Amino acid sequence: MLWTTHVVYGIGGAQDRAMEPGSYSGWYWFVWTLFFAWVWIGALKAELQRILFLLGLWVTLLALAIGAWTGTRGFILLGGYLGLITSVLAAITSAIEVIGHGLRGNPNQDGWAASQLRPVTGDERRAV
Image 1 (cartoon, rainbow, N blue to C red):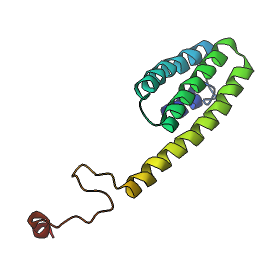
Image 2: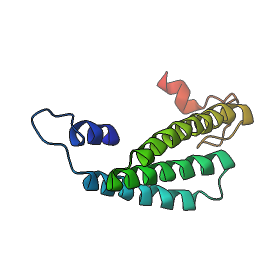
Image 3: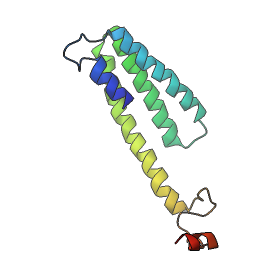
Image 4: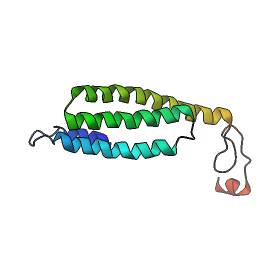
């Protein structure tokens, strides 16, 4: 939502105002690049697809920042294609987490696995 708003209002979505300068967009993408670079460093102990997703995300944002600063269409195009690849990695990571959670039987916060039947306690009987 935040990025969509940035694109719509900042790069020419409003007809009655001028587009923002490329240097502003470059700094915007660069700040997000730094943020996701730190998230990537923090996730280096995670599984490979999560590491690759975060690496792809911050490299995508870096390419967009360089493209906005220099006005080079090649970097913007590179950022777009890297973003598409990163979105595929995000979908794979999400699917593995959602599907794998039920199949592996990871415990929820209450200590019971998602695939296990929970015993009905006295408090739950009174609530019904």
